[in-house]
Amino acid sequence: MATPSASSSAGAARSKSLLSLLSMLFLVFSLAIYPASWIFAHYYIGNKTGCFSDVCNHIKANKYNSMRRNLALFYSFLALTAILALAAKYVRAVGRFAAIRPLSKSTVNLGEIIWFTLAVFTVAFAVPATNWASFYSIKEPQAASGKWEWIHVIFEVTAWLSGDASSVIFGLALLPATKYSAVNDALGLPYSSTARVHGWIGFTTLWIVLFHVATGLLDEQWGTSGFLNLLFVPKHDKSGNSPWGNENYLFVFGNWAAIMLILVVLTSLKVVRRNAYNVFYLSHFLVILAILFSYFHSSMSIFFTIPGIALWTIDGCIRLASRFKANNVIAYTKEECGYRTVTVSTARAVICKPGQFLRIAVPAVNPLEYHPWSVVRTTSDSVTFLFAESHGAPTQWTAKVAAYLDSASINPTDGSKPPRVHVQGPFGLPSRLAVEHRQYHSIVLYVGGTGVAPALAILQQILDERQSSSDADKVVTSDSKSETFTAAATRSVGLHVYLFWSAPAPGIERLTALQTLLGDLAGSDISLTMHLYDTSRPGIEVAVDVTAASGGNQVVAIHATRARPHLRALLNRHVVDKVVAAQDAGAEAAKVGVFVCGPERFMEDALVSVAHFEKEYEKVQVVTEVESYAL
Image (cartoon, rainbow, N blue to C red; front, side):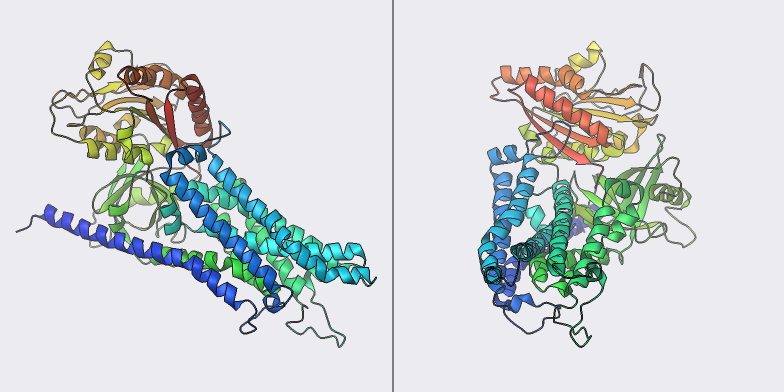
């Protein structure tokens, strides 16, 4: 007869296999959308059936050849994107080059800059260059005959070309917007990178659209009056009517599409996202109106948005389905340091990896509002999160969630239901440090605040994979000058891991997740150096007594300090000796992994420290992973 644990493991394995199969089917279907969209658009051009636009320019003989050229450029660029992404994923030299950060304080890398530059070049130069001659040849005779002024021809052709560019870049802007993206995951594109370039390309889209609106208005009003009427009033024929399909509503719907984009971009500014997230989130649904209005304005625009609309629709349906699945909160702890530890029962646990996050909604607080929470720990059927209450802002979402869970009963005895949440995800790529930890001589986890959550998840996976029954010494050292700990550390021959955590919260050394992890150290070949920084008030270093597991030759000691950490000094103090020892032992190039997660200023200072360390020790290969709060 199978034991409960064996049955649970078998059930988890079946769930994981089913989810893996669904993920594979999702990937195949998502990939098929691209060629299917191109084939559909290519053959639909020139077809008069089913056009609901005021200007069905895809059936005009002077336009559909240019549209096919634009489609070829659009999908060729997407194919180039896939090739470059796969090269960065599987060719180490390419990946290192793409990961280079030109600005020491920024997480922006060369891969993102190159992609954006190529996208802008394709839209702003390649698209106009391939169509200029054909458009100009149509209008040039009118200028040569004296019917049109040359400046009028320039405005007309420029309006056409900028319209083509607007359609292409609008299609590009939609693609990185999906959260559930099997294609992005398969290409190894980080969520932070796709979100960032989505913002860049979105702002660029607005500027190109505004340029198109301006040139179109200048073209239309050349030699006429009523400039402002073109903005919102349809044109009339000689009988005073405005029949649909005769370019009478061309400017009305084009201008409203531009207005929708202006609202979306303005509410995407950082000041709005941070202070009024729901405004930012809800305003993005105006993109649907922008797509609809742009299609009514000109049928050409829809052909480049087909893959983005398809992927966005699938993504939306998957996320919508999560609203109908409630997950129970099975454990909740109000930590001494003020943080909250929440464990949720969910089948998604089997596919959650360190470095990923899930989006959580608490229906009792707001059923529509989702927030990203990083994974601290997973089991076969549950996920543990960590969040901090927003002090001084009781109306904020986290404060409401904390108040709700503080007053709720996790194990009610009156027949009522425990607290429930909705879960979306996981999103993002797994941490490469956790996956490739055996390639490193040392791993540094440098985190601030609740940024410790993904760090603990990374460390937990490393521990799980390196667990053994060896009787070799397993040592945890502290960032103190104690000779006892230094001597003990030298007995470890395994991986050196350093956890440097700062938080404005007294008692972080007694965090439940941290204590659980320390209890799992037995049997590991890891030497863990841990230093905790309580930045809630200034002061000098104070040793803190910690009740932690100890077994065999394992020694556990943690020292806390009331000061702020400095990563460069910590790297020089702790990592350099291990690197030199590895090189003396014959290693060709010592490899150090650095994981950084915390507030924006915290990460900027950390990245500057890493840059200085790399310059000082050129023979050391440093691989840096950054998880931003700004998701």
